[in-house]
Length: 143
Ligand code: G1P
Figure 1 (spheres, rainbow, N blue to C red):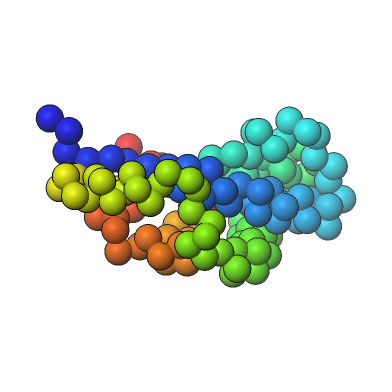
Figure 2 (cartoon, rainbow, N blue to C red):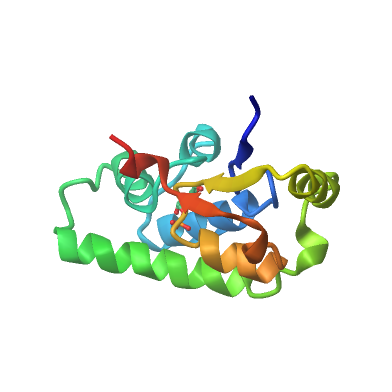
């Protein structure tokens, strides 16, 4: 019996992938790393630290930073990303999602988000959807 729906966030409820990529590209450029076109696909759905490690590998800089420096670089990217998503509103919810969520709720179904993004709660709040979800889970936390 159907008990609920589990949604990915980036690219499903709203299109934040472009903002993630823009922020990663800015960081890569500052570090003197050229990202090939294939990087945009490779970066999708990866956690923040996995994404940073991949970018550093593209630039052959994977051994140039210790963990604290990497945390600072990841935080720098996230600050930039958060300035991009400041303007998100309910108008940025992708088509069909509001009626799907409403129908699911009317049928008593549970709603959850499965996202690697630590910004998921913030984004759901900006979209005005936070209260509709019963759970937010990072799939990487399930082992
Ligand atoms: C992280 C990554 C981002 C990736 C996202 C997957 O988000 O930084 O590039 O697309 O996971 O949803 P963050 O935790 O930084 O919001």
